[in-house]
Image (cartoon, rainbow, N blue to C red; front, side, top):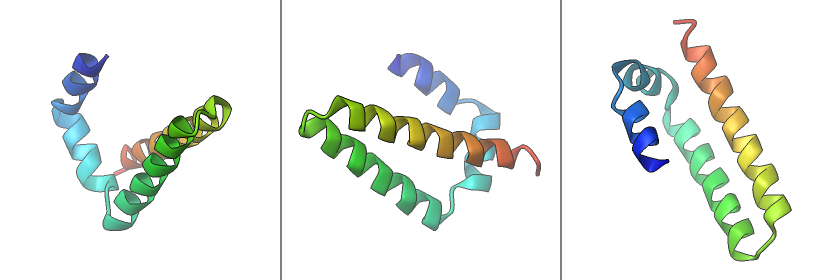
Length: 70
């Protein structure tokens, strides 16, 4: 799975979208989301972890989709 993620990250279009969408505010938001997901995993609350991960992925998808408008 990590190999596939890294393949996408090495794509030129991915790099372009990241430059467009990743502001300091967005990065801070993603970091906070990651911390909450990790905490849910540490506290063994899989339902919460799944919900938080779904929200995070939806936020990232929305952000990346918006970048295609530029």
